[in-house]
Amino acid sequence: MADYFSPTVVQPTVPNADMTALERLLLTHIFESEPDGDGLYFFAETSPNDQIELPIAELRAALASAEGVPSETAAFVQGQLKDVGDDEPYVQIDLSGTSYEFILQEIVKRSSTLNHIAIVTSFTCTKMRSDGFGGMAVLVTADAIKGKSTHDIIGDFRDEAEHGSLAAAPRFGVHVLLRLHEQQVRQTIPHLIEADETLTSIVADAVTEDDIRAACIHVAERMELKEEGDSVVFKAALAAIREAEQRLAPVR
Image (cartoon, rainbow, N blue to C red):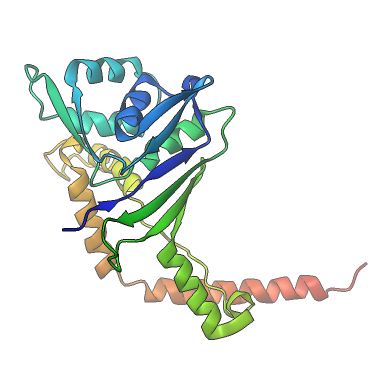
């Protein structure tokens, strides 16, 4: 039997002042941590935890202390608590259907000192399995979460091997126009329900992360964007003509 591990480091140190009590509680259970000056250095010797058990009283107290701070983290936790009885001492927080990066992004958005957080993960295995080794780097900024795995890097190398130096040259560029982010879907659901009382009888919190993941996969597999793609190509061609006109226009 082979065991798979994902040792991970988070850099730089996250200042205590930039974290709400709720974010600190979650992150210190997702990762291991060590004090570093006025902050915490987060890491995972084996793998980050995507299933964490917390005392419900402590979690509710942390949630209450974060009240008034706009937070997707708080909304996520409230969704996890909706079916938990008041007499239950512990609650299981399931992060398997989402990713902890959104917690770090909210910290970066509010921080006056951090403009990014980088997460570096190594994929290892106790046996020399072909799928057991590699890694990933993720950069979290206030505006985006971007990552690339060693598999992606090898894909880049293969493109370069096939096209040579042209892989990064004009005419070979590929530009991503649309990504479907599950957190944006989560943010849209309450607005839809509020705007149309006839849409559904359920509340927004009844829609789970698993529901959103399944819906995103369904839409991505079935969405036909050929007409939109043709329109974008047409607009880009017109814009390229305008760029050339401006470049070639006589200087007055």
